[in-house]
Amino acid sequence: MAKILVVEDSERLSEMLVERLERRGHSVILAIDSGEALASAKASRPDVIVLESQLRGAGEWATARALKFDDQTRDIPIVGLIDNNSEEARALALQNGCDALHGKPIDFGHLIREIDAAAEKSAEGAADLQE
Image (cartoon, rainbow, N blue to C red; front, side, top):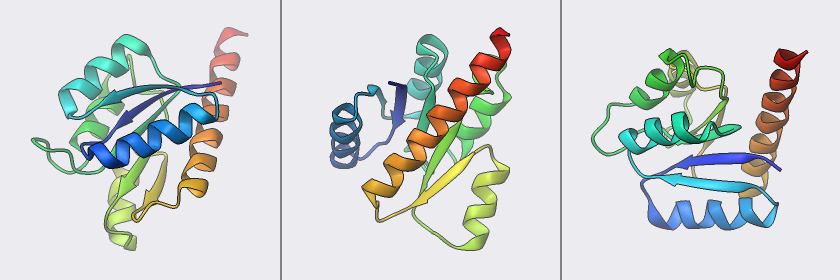
């Protein structure tokens, strides 16, 4: 299956995500802050990044922007987790590099489907580059 980088500073939420993703056969890498997220994304080249909107010590979507402006990570799909599900918040997330969004509270079934779809899209893009 896919390699997923989960960037979430809530231990409880990250544990639930890891459990569900690993049950589906995905390999999961965890990061709890922006620095770890950027280093892990470059080192492990995940298929998808699941990213909390506001990490401790970073501005809202600063990590998403950094990932999208870096040549090594710009093509990795980002599924953003947002607390505020308003149209303005969703637009801001998309403008800052998220490819898909999921509001809180988390509907894990829906989120897993979004992650699977992003992983499939990522795999298709990688296959296109190899041809």
